[in-house]
Amino acid sequence: MNAHDPERPDPKSGAQPPAPAEQAAAPALDPARWIHRLRNELNTASMACAAAQAVLAGGAVVKAQENLERARGACARAAALLEQAPPRG
Image: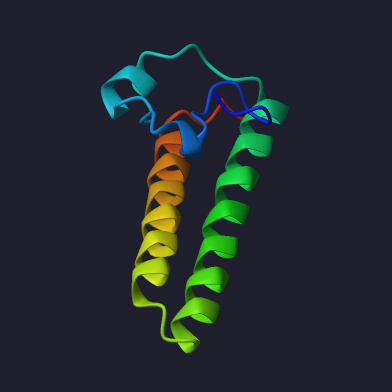
């Protein structure tokens, strides 16, 4: 598990995030926790894209692909979080 977010697997462990069906069954999130998790995923995607761009400029295509896959995963997790958005109060 990820030390910063126990509900998100550590990417180094090889564990996969829960399937969308499993995520949909999760209890409603506290709004502050939800926005924090969403911001984390968007930051992960942004940083991974910047890293991909930097390593691609140096010709490291495989590393760029790894970073793009990391960004894709973060976008998928962000989309799943949007499906779990807490009700507006």
